Length: 366
Ligand SMILES: [Zn+2]
Image (tube, protein in one colour):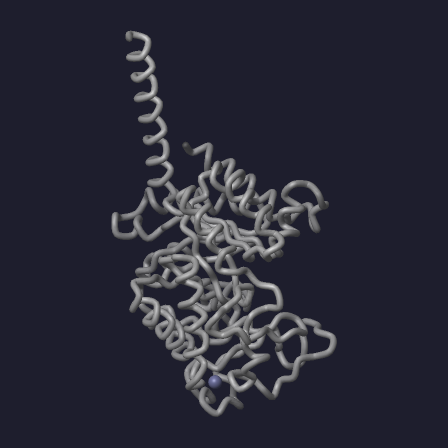
């Protein structure tokens, strides 16, 4: 009997230590995220194993999956990739995330990123009338920079039919993922308010950008869902010296004062630990800092987040949500690098090393 009592006491103490440390971590960094392309169906098994064996033990609690057209949409079968996740596949992802208390958030790139290099993505392939710049033809051989300033195509946010189509996709995906937050991308929107667009020409680009954010956000809110976006279009690339990628040089940055404050900002910076999270928080937004492939930058960003939380008023402190590792390759090539099956493309800029270093540091906090 005494033996059992001792055992119970030991278990009680251990569970308290565990709860305490989890609480500590949650208060230091409420969001500990990972963002990657959704796996193709053939990579689903290894990816689920990765969630269970790598993400969950490292206390990752948020997983953003870039799905785009990698899903067998019933609302718009014409927009599916030739191979896409089924509803059953997504159910497996939902279950493993629920089991491990990971908040699963799907992404479809809205507005910008409607093409990549020389390839137009499904939306504008099927509905070319939504193209903001139909006069700009896709090159046979893509190179950057180019005379058209073509990075990625955008859809026209003022086209009267576009939201009906994209919101069908968003709603269907959100239902399948049983998600409460949706990531709309919205990074690097270079084609906006084009002079030749009959609807957008002459309009204020900040207002156009803010209008699209608001439209998406208002749609999601009807179902009690939250909008997440990348933050680059809301930063002034000239004044900050951050340039045209991680900040805006196409006059969208004033949109920061025009969009609803409940939009969550994913503030990505890969070269330096810029203190831009403070700017977003002071504007009233919840913000997550996002590193990519430089471990030393990611660790600095993590420490900054913790400092911001600890050295701010309660109102401000709560807006610094945490940190999210971003990976921009496909799932299978990332997993190959992660497990050492394939040499990293660049040893000095390695997302899997960045992830491991960052989450080792995060787990040290416990
Ligand atoms: Zn337009």
